[in-house]
Length: 67
Image 1 (tube, rainbow, N blue to C red):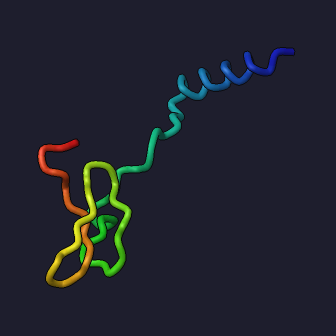
Image 2 (image 1 turned 180 degrees about the horizontal axis):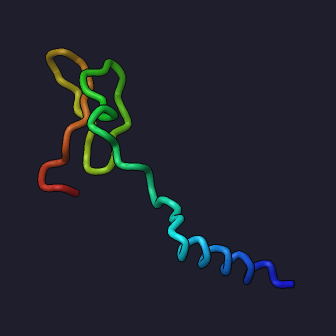
């Protein structure tokens, strides 16, 4: 029996039912965006890490004009 064909049929069935696997990381909520932290954060898509020279703290800011 061809297992590859069963995998394709299972994928088509789950897509038809409405169960969709997510592509990429989930979108961050407003609470998940790090601001004023002592260590350099990992920012999500469309954001970059910025270190304030006066306080020495890191924040995630929106990239101007997008990516």
